[in-house]
Image (cartoon, rainbow, N blue to C red):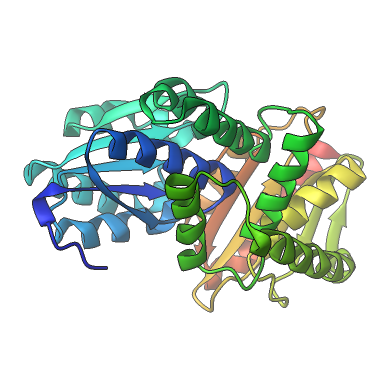
Length: 330
């Protein structure tokens, strides 16, 4: 990471899915239209604090955080990082749609953060309404934001847009895709105004093939199945960034609340939950406290949440989740 003009650069920090990246591109295009020098960083909620601490050494003029919910487990470090940036006269704009962020709205605004939030859409919904008209091509960036909304499941589009959103979502979750490729996609959107390139189709095909292979193995690791719920322990598998799509696929196919546990590293265990639209289950309310009980945290939406705990607490978290699913969804 090298920014030659420290005090004149603005940095967008975004989630690496379609909603986050599409939103980042719209914001970046609007800032560029104003003559800003703008760069992109990609983060996860649990890595946001580390990213902001790293950026404090750069002394940016402004940071725009997009589609990243506050992670309860790292909030104290995140709060300190935000405070340090504000004390450096860095302006911070936070654009989000996760309930965990609005719960910290008072603390964030007290620190000096400007918050743009919606509970009826995605980050792309916000930037389409707030930034698309400030770009040099409102029609293109409105369409891009629409793809972000479709990818996040908060909107539907015509057949063309649905196919584009599916292809981009699949490509961005391909195991071979790294952050640098995601940045290149955003750069293509901002500088070339092209929605897809030849790589997208190839990566989408790779992703779908691996997804099908993983689905077979994941379904062999079901540890609990009730009338409306399903718990899968895939800690012995390498899911290569496909956990969210796997949980979504299973939840849609079985019409059951699906909780998928996996181990992204030796240090932590993650449980990702997906809730079918027609089922009444608040994944945030019901499951996140279980992670907090065991030294972790979580975030997301009532219909799509993720929990993270230290690896040593993995068995205890699994047991607690099974208890909750039996009680609420049997």
